[in-house]
Image 1 (cartoon, one colour):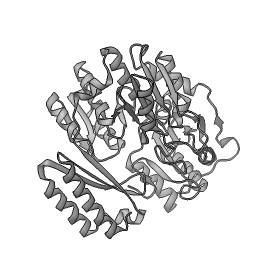
Image 2 (cartoon, rainbow, N blue to C red):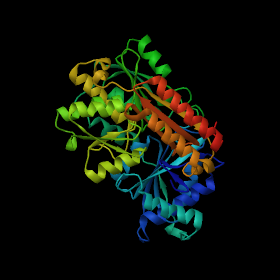
Image 3 (cartoon, rainbow, N blue to C red):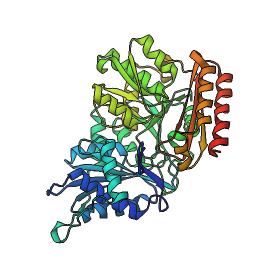
Image 4 (tube, rainbow, N blue to C red):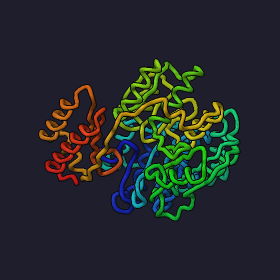
Length: 451
């Protein structure tokens, strides 16, 4: 991770860590880096989620862009993957999303996409950091008619929804579903998308007020959706996070269907139709061992990357794979998108139900997940760095790996988006993995002051 950018852009508490001044400087630096000294007038698209701070930060960022001569299409509230798509649609040089994704309302973030709709590579993020933090270059400000202008396209939501609809061959009529918008960006798009695909849809948590994004709803809090699906006898439920780049599901019996199971169902379907490039799925080091076994049993190849959908996508681009994702619900259909897209994932999964005339509860049996335990420990940015050099922490992790042997595994890593160190243990013996995860957590608390 860089000094500004984590695994998913710049992230921090709005007006404290992520200030208007910082947003303005990031805007200026981004325009300078992505236009690479060109004298032509660059164009950016900028979207926001529904946080109270998003308008404030977007205004500062767009002011920074305009001050160095860039024009801006202000998209308003719209999902992150819509920004990635509309960069190309509107022939822009780059796209920027103001969102902290699944984090609570007091956080916010800045995600930057290049002109081809992909997240910026580390090298470009480092150039932006060097301008903002080290002042290696002072972006030249414009004057007179050289100052950029802000435009407000009225068709942004329609253009994005039309693109999503084009990825499925038929309607979803006859399917009864619930859609949890997390009081986030999907509140602007989900009803239009699912109703135009003719699903019988119940839209939930689509009344954002600036502070209720991800608040006891969405993909980080699935219980209300699970209960709603069962009580109303629905075929499925889908839930997004604040910027709608993730999707988790609920089957007709109210059971959680996580990203690994969604990927198993979709990978099997793509493979059966000859649409899975190189018969390969890309996941991460946190992908459940049950998914890896599913791939082996199905004759598919599995490739693991570091945690973060950006790393999944980088591997997909490098080796020309077409499908990958994370257990958290970031699923990438590279034939249709340049990033994880929760609503795209939802309609792809639901179209499989429709085409096969199957119940989601039947399809989830395609893989059997291994017991997996995740412990999230709060810490500081300084202690996240100490994690990499603390000798006792390294010893504790290695000891647990030896105990689990071939029957399980342990992965310990600082979060790239939150002030947390995550301890994940997985194996066939739940009692054993709980014991080992707790041992490591105790050492982290003692050595690094985690809690």
